[in-house]
Amino acid sequence: MAPGPGLPASLALCRPAARATPDHRAPKSAVPGTLLLLLAYLVYLALGTGVFWVLESPAARDSSARFQRDKWALLQNFTCLDGPALDSLIRGIIQAYQSGDIVLGNTTSMGRWEFMGSFFFSVSTVTTIGYGNLSPRTMAARLFCIFFALVGIPLNLVVLNRLGHLMQRGMHRCARRLGGAWQDPTKARWLAGAGALLSGLLLFLLLPPLLFRRMEGWSYVESFYFAFITLSTVGFGDYVIGMDPSRRYPLWYKNTVSLWILFGMAWLALIIKLILSLLETPGRSCSCYHHSSKENFKSQSWRQNPDGEAEPHSPQPGCHPEEPMGIMQHPEPSTHVSCRGKDN
Image (cartoon, rainbow, N blue to C red; front, side, top):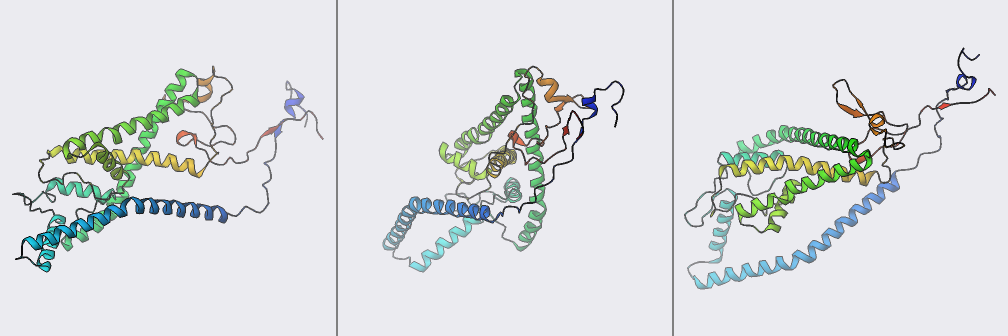
């Protein structure tokens, strides 16, 4: 083909090269990687098993021996009681506690199935925390709980996903503004991520234990332990708010804790997602920002969308739109332009 008028011959000979032919070599098997992952998983579980066994087993034996000593001392001091009667009394106390009743002093109920207690139980159900300190006793409530959880758990996941997306957008907006001011998108992105991490730690894990310490009488370490176990939905049930019959709790207390659980779970899910992306794609992070000219950062890295808001530029060849903190996927081969000075 003859070069067009006014065009250099070298440009006229530039045309898109054919897409690179895929490599037909046999793909590597994923079985060894899966086996290594399962082995690491089992080793981690074995590590946890050993540590908990060493730390907790002596304390559990001491607690059991102390309870048996107190029980036999009570039977010796009160000869009118026998062993089976005392065991029956203990079982009744345990059942009363699980039902929300208590027999300490003049307090006969902690109001766990009042309106606020029922609301907190609903929150712990749809968030899958499941403290285990309270459960429905009537068959009608148990059946309703099944259908309530079937709909509520997916709805809760949708809400958490939306809240996490809003948090992520806020982090990216902050990174955009910092990058425009500093002319350094990489530093701005990492600073925004660190700011989101530290602010979340402060709002959801470091400050709430102060409230629990005041309202529940726990130590700060116990309160911090409860905060993390709750937000991670582990929910052992050894520490639960509003369970001390000797304390009077304000009405706003459980409402505030419920909101804290919702937003805190969204933040922690965002952090866990980031950690998972780092673990699953090690060494594959890349930046799709142009770094060739810091002076041209605004014009190269962002463009205006129809609404007038800045948005990221098109990624470079081989990069995909960024996930949080720049975790990328595998680049795919793309068509490129090759220039030749003459035809072969």
